[in-house]
Image (cartoon, rainbow, N blue to C red; front, side, top):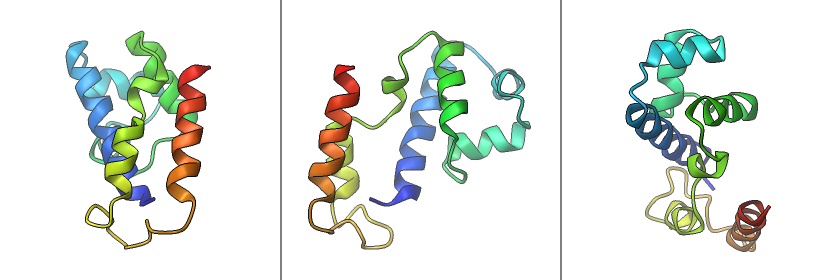
Length: 108
């Protein structure tokens, strides 16, 4: 799976959730104790967000963290050869492993 595509997807979900809650980038950045440029990089997918910051955003927005993560369907799209930025999404078993992990996370 292409990490940049996943970061882009998570960033989009963060931005949508932040905007639904009428929060500014500055307010969320302050809550995370990161600079506004760092938070902008999270939202644009230029920088992968840490798990700790992802949990903090979910907590701030009052939502389950899985709402910020790609769904199984999203992963399938991200794993498609046409979506890959580096062409490394066709490794045997990767799709099933990720789908299994996401299904388990969503059940817990």
